[in-house]
Image (tube, rainbow, N blue to C red; front, side, top):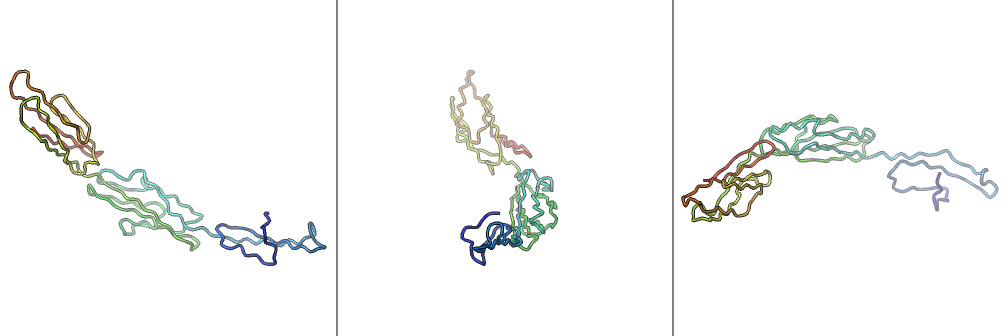
Length: 219
């Protein structure tokens, strides 16, 4: 037991409490102190906990159809605090079990927000959290060049104009033995033909995600 500094009156108010505590009162007189003091039975004041909503996801982006199931979403249950569970996807309730009931994103380049709303088993404060899940878009590579014809050595600047560029990885083949994996590679110089004839180079751009690869080329 810990003596509370300043708590020497007949009554005591602990103020705002954040955890369960036990209190007892020791009464002494001038004649009855020490082992002769009167010690009351303990009084336990129980502070019930608020709910905690918490879950993790193994992955939040995947190919369509993206089956978001209970193996992907893993909640922390806190049975000593939580009473009821409510799973909500894009504002629509889909289940009340502790385990995630499952949801599938069928379209490419789509997203949903999964929310867990938890209520306290003691009627205390509720809690919620949410995560967003995505599907990859179809890669649609494209590029432009600032020069398609000229005398060698010919320097050409290429510009990646693919949609949603940041979501893909790229492989360039410039048809002259040079390649690049940069999103926007530096200028390429095509040499003169040693045979003094016209030479045609085909530039190819491949865009890839975890789901698919697409190719675009310009002669």
